Length: 250
Image (cartoon, rainbow, N blue to C red; front, top):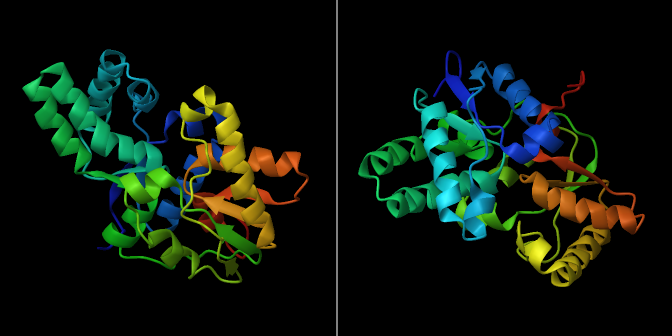
């Protein structure tokens, strides 16, 4: 599909909007470079995942209704988070059923079918792996649990990274192991979370990478915090922000 003229709605996600605004900005940079028009529906809020994961289904249902309302008019919705996109796909239908609202369930199904992880939109919809990125650094990639197991982005991130000019992409040992963040898991089980994160940080350090890259900033925040405490000297970066870099800058 030709990107020229394609209008995409940006689902920024609340963690990015509040803590990592550079990530959704990078998504806009990349998509506009490819000829897309990106719009940001102001009605969007949280996807409700934190409520749902903790068992507060009734509290999450209004977020589902709001997501449907905010993004109903778009054929393509993109989010730079496998976790939040996965929540929309798998939790929103469940929550609509929990609410007993058949009309909401039907609208959810329509919007869910048009919601894509950033890597899926690039590779599957736009048919692009080379986005014109340039990043002359040693990089290792952590495939986050929700992106792989829930959103099922597969090898799309690697396909995109492999086309980045100047990059030295090195494999991460035990890449399929969880980093220990897990949203509310890290709050309820901090000792276990830190132990798991410590293993992940050690594997990252063993690669000699300058940058750790993922598609989910929550996991990146968790691992990055541990790397910082260990004075590992390894920087963290969201995949979208890496792809936004070109030889002339961002």
